[in-house]
Amino acid sequence: MNTVAQIFVGLAGAFHLAVFVMESLLFTRPSVYRRFLVPNETEAAVAAPWALNQGFYNLFLAIGAIGGLIAGGDKGHAIALFACACMAGAGLVLVATNRKMVRSAVLQAGPPIIALVLAAVL
Image (cartoon, rainbow, N blue to C red):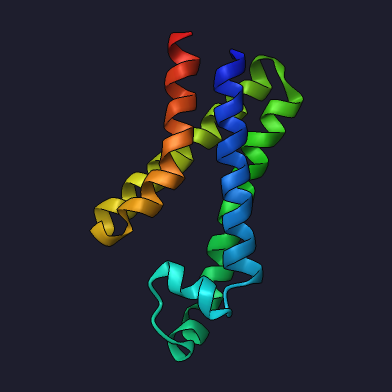
């Protein structure tokens, strides 16, 4: 995998690590749960178990992307690109489910899509 694609894989992994922290560790803070369109503390308390679980999905994707880069070689890069494909798919599902989440979907899916394209063409 080329260096530019690796940079975008790293960015995608870092983004998903940050989302893990927000969803699994900081979700009960108003400034955080409002980013996920949760309007108040009562609904945040109901959504917190979902957010914890979702955060770990993001952590596992980040581990796949970053771990694949660290492992290197064809197998490591295949793992990193598979994680990116999953991130891209999740971003597409997010925007298809709720058009208000288009900004979040672009942040989630943009870097991994760029990594996939660059890995394929360079």
